[in-house]
Image (cartoon, rainbow, N blue to C red):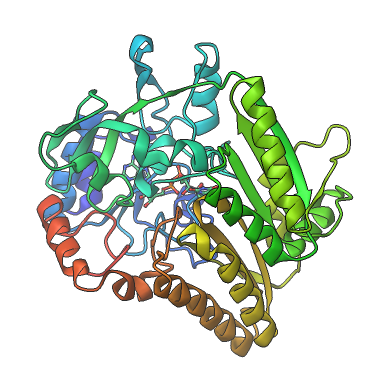
Length: 453
Ligand SMILES: Cc1cc2nc3c(=O)[nH]c(=O)nc-3n(C[C@H](O)[C@H](O)[C@H](O)COP(=O)(O)OP(=O)(O)OC[C@H]3O[C@@H](n4cnc5c(N)ncnc54)[C@H](O)[C@@H]3O)c2cc1C
């Protein structure tokens, strides 16, 4: 019996589809990589049903790609070997709220902003705050990519908040890993292994997160600089001083110009930093003053936003603004991360190399953690230009690795950066292959992502 006939035996017809429009939605993510249509999309009912689906898929050697909101940027959600897409976006419930412990157990499909809206009344929040996708990204997707965001410089990325998971492995086994204890020395940390594994080891069906208290107070400020490297230097100086930043976002002048074009913000088209501080009034004042004097030493001037303009709303549109800047152009992206002291060098490197190659580049990101997005615009129709764009992106990644950094700070490897994975990890990739085999002996879970078996 083929896989569809098998699934039809136990999945209601309104939760299993082969309709072209639904397959088209499931065929892509937010990367610019080519879509691949799956055989079918399933909206499973519960973990037991997922387990049964996996057993059927294993017997028929059918690949399974789990999907949250499909907002991933490196092709990790594209069902590149077809098979089944397991859509968990309808799993949006809070399973249990442990208010006294500042913890919550949720289903994987709950959307980041929706969760935080619910936590607000308890004075709590789940901090990572993805820059432009908090309104769509699911918690399951965030755990699977170890997403981070605006507030990660102070509070950490997603992985730091995951205590316990319920998972279904590639053999269909349902198990709980981790515990609700916030400090653990009990065996291997499988929770951290699943976080960031891009759906290649297991399907996450429940997530227990620890939460943070909403800050007592917060304050925002913004600075503009005469050049990109000075802005970057201000950030690495702030880090060196141990400044308690809740957020620091860098936008180069090209990004600011793209934002003006998209939404008519009327911003000064200079490189800028958006900052936020959290804490009691006295600490806010002291941190703001120190940040101000570091910025001033590097030529930074305060940027006063117009009434009604909010920094994070502006920042939210950065990727969109670049995407819609020039018709006929596509984005070649990366999201490298490196030790914070290397930020000025990396910003300079990206722009110098783009100039040499006569390519358009935009740099921005959650730079307080040494994370930088370098988005190159090129035309696919111009094969030489596209190839030069890819070469530039690879050059940026290779320089990052030389400086002690990593290919991906937050978006994952997916299909987009598989080619350089071995360069970063060397022989450890073989160990990763063996780990994958333990979870997924038949390589049915999101096969072909991160590395090939
Ligand atoms: C405009 C824009 C801005 C963005 N900004 C940021 C940012 O600031 N920081 C950041 O980190 N990311 C950012 N992203 C990327 C993206 O939003 C994140 O990677 C997000 O965590 C993906 O969540 P999702 O629900 O869309 O996951 P999906 O795209 O559906 O899936 C992502 C990966 O997780 C796997 N997966 C999903 N759910 C499960 C599950 N339950 N079990 C097992 N595997 C699963 C998928 O198979 C896939 O490999 C941005 C994206 C866009 C479009």
